Image 1 (tube, rainbow, N blue to C red):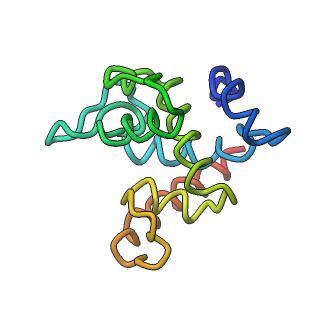
Image 2 (cartoon, rainbow, N blue to C red; image 1 turned 90 degrees about the vertical axis):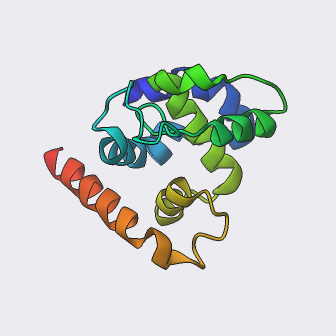
Length: 140
């Protein structure tokens, strides 16, 4: 997961100072990636709306571009693991600055900025990601 920061550090470092974004987000990204696609960069959901290793929607691509104030990402970038990680970090650093892992998981699943007040709708996903997170942590 050290490749995670290759592109993201340059952009996010200005906003986060000396925070190690790999340390902050790497483990949760790994768990989400395994739940979403088993790590497959070319994964596409049954309905075709979610693409890539993190199952990113077109809406999220547009949201990341809006956060950045420029068109950096294309829909095709969802198939690129590095760019998918970068979009995850941009989204989380904007809407989850505190780095709350539970919020990160629930927010990624729902896109609902009030996900912490409406936990029931994301409970199954949260438990699945946490189980994968703990499984990955046990391997270390």
